[in-house]
Image (cartoon, rainbow, N blue to C red; front, side):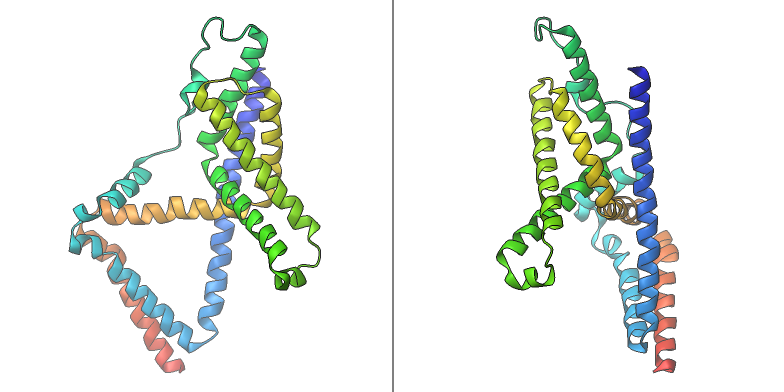
Length: 262
C-alpha cells in the first residue's frame, strides 16, 4: 500500500510538472506568433508599441487611485505571490479525520476508502491547475457538441462528429464524477473505490488531451497573478522604474521604427 501510494504521489507530481512544461510551450509559441504578427506589418508594430505604453501606464493606476480601493485584487494577488506550493497533506477535512466507531461495519473497506479519499484530496491540492483546466476543457467540449447538434453550418465544417461526441461524453462524465466525489467528501461519507478509479481513469485521458487548458490556467493564475502582485506589493517608484518606464520607452521606440518602415 505504501509503495502504491508513493507511486500515486510521484504521478501527481509528474502531472504538475507537465502543466509547467505546457505553460512554457504555450508561452514560447505565443511569443513566436506575436513576433510574426508584429513584424508582418508596420501598422502592427505601431499598435504593439501603443499597447506597451498602455500597459506601462496601467501599472501605476492602483497607485494613482489608491491601492486601498482595489482591496480584493490586492489581497488576491498578494496571497498568490506569497503562497508557496500547497502543503503535502489533504485539503479536505473529510480525508484526514478518522471515521467514528460503528460508522462502517467493514474496517478493511473503510481503510481502503479513506486511503483513496486522501489520494483524491492530494490530487486536488497538487493538481489544481489540471482540475480547472479539465473543467474548462470539459465545458468547451460539451459546448462544441451542442453546437454541432444545433448549428448545421458547423456540422458541415466538421463532417466526422464521432470523435467530438466521445470527447464530450468523457468531459460530461468527468464533471459528474468530480461533483459526486465532492458531495461524498462534503458529507464525510467514504466514496466507493470503484467510483474514484473511474474518475482517475477519465481524468488521465482528459488531462492528456486538454493539457493546454491547464497550461493557460497556470499562466493566468501564476505568472499574471505574480505580475499584478508585484504592482501591489511595491511602491510607486519601483513600479515606475521596473515596469512603466521600460514599457513606455520600448513602445516609443517601436512607434519610431514603424514610422521609418511605413
